[in-house]
Length: 152
Image (tube, rainbow, N blue to C red; front, top):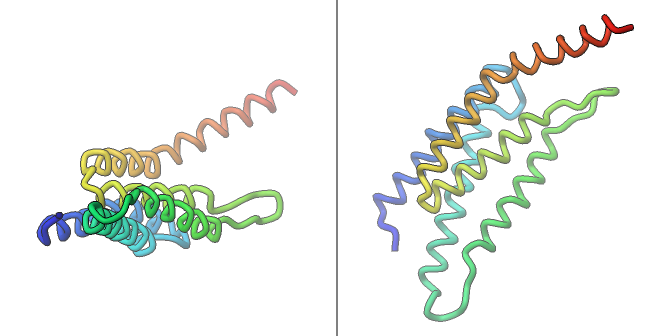
């Protein structure tokens, strides 16, 4: 059984890690920003904790699979993420925000089950990708576009 202190640590850590991801989305003024990412991660952590709690309570009574509740998180977050994707003419907006929400749910699930190192490393990688790879992506696109015009 997980103690109250460990539960508090897991929930607070989910808020801290997800706030880093949400901060980038907020600074770039995307619809799903700081608070949305925190709530997705916190909710995922809570659901994982609940899954572990239910498993622990009933492990001697009935055969349970704690991963079944986790799979429900992925389905639910997929639905939430789909709502952040919008089509504007020939372009699609919101895919990165949807992906960041999805990975934030994964961070919450990892924290909820005590997989702290993976959650922290994933948060760091997502933070780097969101903050620094956008500029790299633009440079690559410009180079490809420019290169395609030179060859005409």
